[in-house]
Amino acid sequence: MAEETRGAFIRNIAEVPWREFPNHFGGALSKPLVMPETAGSRRIDYRISMYQPMAYVARHHHKVQEQVYHVLDGEGLMEIAGKNHVVRKHDVIFLPPGVEHAISNSGLTDLVFLVVTSPVTDDDKPV
Image (tube, rainbow, N blue to C red; front, side, top):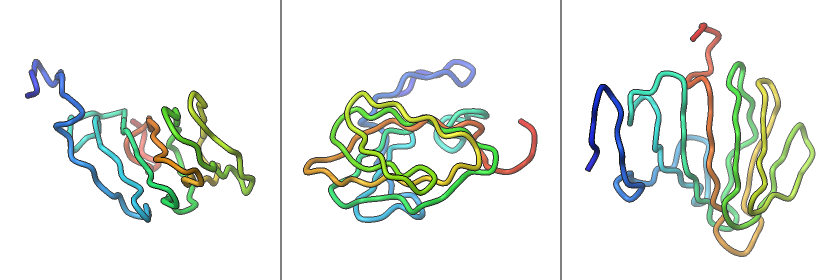
């Protein structure tokens, strides 16, 4: 159960249900651990994702958001600006705004990674 003080909390990952967000396919699941809807965050979107073999997110880019991916387990392909890179455990990927990217599980086991995005929305409004 979440303990709250002015919005602060401790939550066990098992309390958060898996979701398949738009443009995520084939068993590309995420747990939205900290985001406006689940935590009231204003500047951070923090998720753990688990992609089954062949799962992927469609190629896209962000106007103003920065992202960090941290691979915890498995392996896959991270496409950055049209070039594929093998990613696996302990790889960290930084994506500045405007860079087209996609990630897919091309491995034999689940690809598990953290994603941190800031700001939480991709509009041009100042935070």
